[in-house]
Image 1 (cartoon, rainbow, N blue to C red):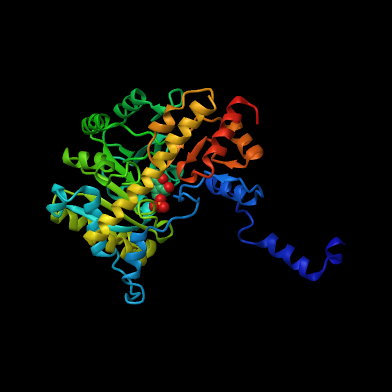
Image 2: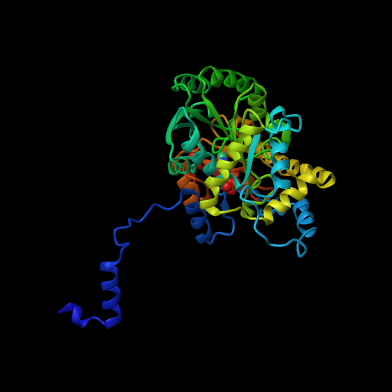
Length: 422
Ligand SMILES: Cc1ncc(COP(=O)(O)O)c(C=O)c1O
C-alpha cells in the first residue's frame, strides 16, 4: 500500500538500496586527526586554533612554501616532460636521498649494497617495507610498535600482511621515555622479530632516546637478532641538523645491522601533497641488492606501477645542487628553530606568567613537531568547546600550529583547563 503511494523515483531508489551489493558495508569511524580539522573548520570563533594537524605553519599560521622548493620547481617547470618514471623512481633523486639518510661516508652505500626505491612519501615507504618483509623476511611476521605510535602504523603493517604487537615506550607519569619498560619489552621479543623504531621526533610523543640509549638499543637489537625497521619522517626537522637527526639509523648501520629505512620529504621540504619518499634496505653486497631491488619492482608494479615525478624532481634538484642544498639546510633549521622557540615561549608562559600547576619541562625537552602535553581528555574537550582550541583527544599538540599571535591565548586557555576555570 505504502509502496504504491511513493513517487516512482523514491521507490526506485529504495529498491536499488535494498538490492545493492554494498548494502552490508558498515559505516567506518572517522579519522581521529581529520575529525579535529572538521570541527575546527566549522567553528566561527576568530581566535580558534588548530593544533591537530601535523603540518608546519609559519609565523602567521599559514602553510610555508620553502624558497628552495620554489627555486627548484622554477628551474624545470615548462621544460621537463611528463613521461613515466621507472618503477623505482627518479634515479638522481633516489641516490641523493639515500645519501642524505645514510651519510656520504656510509660503507654499504659506497659498496653499492643499499637497495632503494622512491615511494609515495613516508606512508608508501612503510607500506612497501611492510609488504616486502611479509613476503621475504624469513624469520618472523611480527612487527613490534612503540606504545603509542603514529596512528597509521598499525593499519599499514596489518594491511601489509604482518602481525602487529607493542612494546612500552612512553611513561605517562613522567611524560618521558619509559626506558626500563622499553628495554624489558625489547629484550623479551622472540628472536628475529621486527622492531619499528622512530628515527627521530617520535610521533605522537616528541620523546626520543638519547644517543647513548640508541647505542644500547643497537646492542640489544643485535643480541636478540631482531630486525630494525626505521621510520624517519622528520630528518632535519627535529633538531634542525640533518646528520644529528639521522644518528640512530646511521649508528645501527655502522654497527653492522641490515636495516630497513623509510624516508619522507613531506615535513623537511614541505612537500606534503607531492608525496615524495624513499624506502631502502641494507643488503650484504651488490649482487644481493640487485635481487632485492628486482623483488621491490615486482611488488610495486601491481600496486601503483611507478611513482609521481614532480615532487621527486623538486627534491632531487635541491639535493643535487650544492648551493640550493645549503639554502634548504638553512630553511629546515629555520622551521626547526621556530618550533623550538615556541616550546620555550609556551613553557615560560605556563610556568612564569600563569603559574599553571604541574611540571611543564617536557614542553621544552620533547623534540620535533609534536608535544604530548599531558592534558587529559576532559581538558582537551573543554579547550575545544570553551576556547576553540583544537587538538587530538590524547593531548597531543602540533607545536608548528603555535605562533607569536596565538601562543598567549593558547597558554591562558591551557592554564584555565588545568585549573578548571574555563
Ligand atoms: C611517524 C610518521 N611516519 C610516517 C609519516 C608519513 O607521512 P607522509 O606519508 O606524509 O610522508 C608520518 C606523518 O605524519 C609520521 O608522523
